[in-house]
Image 1 (tube, rainbow, N blue to C red):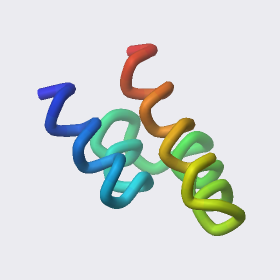
Image 2 (image 1 turned 180 degrees about the horizontal axis):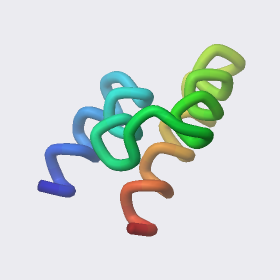
Image 3 (image 1 turned 90 degrees about the vertical axis):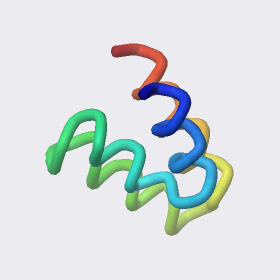
Image 4 (image 1 turned 135 degrees about the horizontal axis):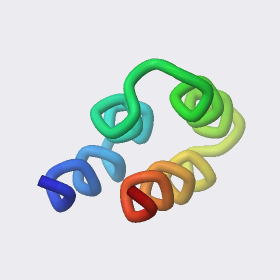
Length: 52
């Protein structure tokens, strides 16, 4: 299941974070990072998925 989340995180980073932690601080932080730059959003999403 983590592989699917990582693939989704590469395509659309907030979706992968949402599937992992739901709507919370990390979700909103990831949306902000994705708006500021696509790559930071991906890095944060993969980190959140790999951490848990």
